[in-house]
Amino acid sequence: MNEIKIFCPATIANVSCGFDVLGLALESVGDEMVVRKTKSPEIRISKIEGQQLPMETNKNVAGVAASALLEKSNYEGGFEIEIYKRIKPGSGIGSSAASAAGVVWAINELLKRPFSKQELVTFAMQGEKLASNVAHADNVAPAIYGGFTLVRSYDPLDIVSVHTPKALFATVIHPQIEIKTSDSRKVLKANISLEKGIKQWGNLGGLIAGLFTEDYDLIGRSLEDHVIEPIRSILIPGFDEIKSRSLEAGALGCGISGSGPSIFALSKGEATAQKVASNMAAVYHGIGLNYETHVSSICPQGIKQIN
Ligand code: ADP
Image: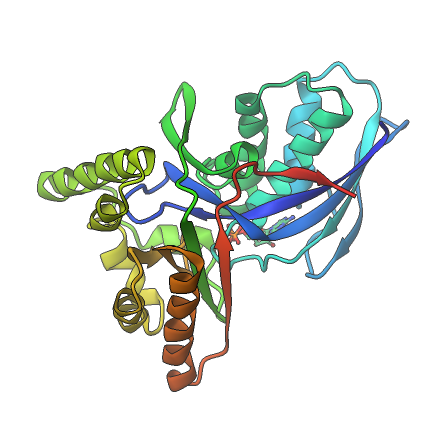
């Protein structure tokens, strides 16, 4: 195989109580990429459609992640990359992660899988470092593994796949303003109180248990963020109202997707998730702010080959 075309899912990182460690992959929102082998031993981005992004290998997260992989490989050729962007950069649903994770997954397939999924995550994290100055894995891990993933440890890297209940649907609303991950990290405090810590790890444990046992009430009770949301939600117009209207529509929980400005909700069943989308949309319609909504099941497989 000399060429592969792939779907790279959008991802929701943090998922309320799991800042920098928890993430999930979406089924129906994502980019496409084509990656092909070349004789000359370099990484070249030959085409980007859908968004204005740097074509230079060292300025595009796909180029940086691919170069990190090539450095550890004994393959003597290079690769050419085409990116078809559907996920807007800076939207908070893992636009940079889709490119960084997608390219290394595709190259691994073309080279007949010399690397483990966890190794692919380490290469993709180099791309995330370019985008946000932090080599976080909470978007690239679910993109590569699919479903929900937990980064149990960064050093050494230890990624755990978490069971995804089938009836779980995500709703995402993206107000058309851009918040760069690097900027929304700057507003965070370096320390948290013990009191907040106790609430946060109680909820994270509860959420993981709720996902494994398909206990939707427990999932709902655990989708709380006492650490990040109170600070970051101030940057997102209408956040409190969107959250209360989502819960009114029957969502299990609602929070900031990644570093925002997108807001996500999780619901049991697609009909509820659709109702949540219309309630969310009504808020931005009222404020007069442009927005996009997505309703999606959780993608069990992650990045996949398409024709
Ligand atoms: P997101 O959470 O949507 O990935 P970030 O703010 O973390 O948003 O990353 C977007 C930044 O990464 C932008 O500055 C963008 O120019 C840069 N970038 C570089 N290459 C890519 C790429 N292939 N896809 C998306 N963003 C990229």
